[in-house]
Image (cartoon, rainbow, N blue to C red; front, side, top):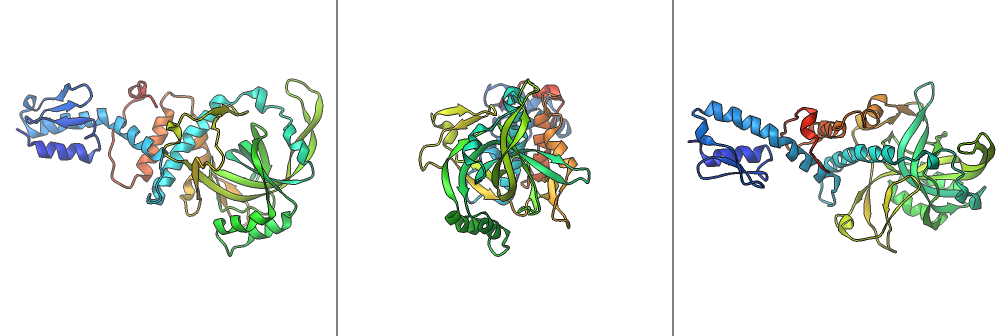
Length: 358
């Protein structure tokens, strides 16, 4: 008979010990259903048992992998390692982009007036939002970035002073943020559109660009003539010019937020947002520094511009709806690429994921 402690060790090694358990006779049973899934007595040789065990690990392994993937999405601990946050961010990026594409309503996103910007015309404002898309020029450089659910969070009359602060190489981003506060008048955050395109000019204050990272941008409110949705008539619309990027961060929710019965709203982009109470921080941020460049969609080169990384961009944006399990497969890819703990799992055919719920 096969020794119980050896079987238990193997279950633990492939991270499915929380799903399966071994009885005193060496049989393996499912903890949830209480049914025996592998009978030791049916296998006379150790080789036969090991082969059956490997098939079992494949059957249960992808559930374990999904559990592992979900763990990285809700990280909150200062003791976490940097690569864990990186992996969590990359996995979240896939889900966020799929959610944005799924909920996008053209009646909101096409032909927006951005009328809330009118009261700040010719003023420099501070906006914040998540990067969802880019436009690339003929030379392969990113010339525009799209921020979804942009919020007005401040305004300034000291734009040159702010540029000098953020251009300085002496201080880290948290120090720059503190120095910039005296030049910015905070505004209670207001979502003013489903999205906004930001043109990148001479000064690009980041080394790499990552999809779904959180941007703080300063720009001057201006008007232009644009087409009305479902009409060929032109009218006055509002946007930003003379923009520069102040910071690029990643946000992680604090662990108790989604369990709280807090009021939520659906913004113009169709995304669910939690209404924050005054002085209530629902998330914390990390600066993007020394992250894997191969996951960046833009990398600054000798020209000072962001060179477009098509391979990374396509990985995060293409085929998200072609297969039911494409998201799972891509998450598995990232897990396999960056998981440092030797976690093992089996990937099965696409039909094996059809009953998986998130």
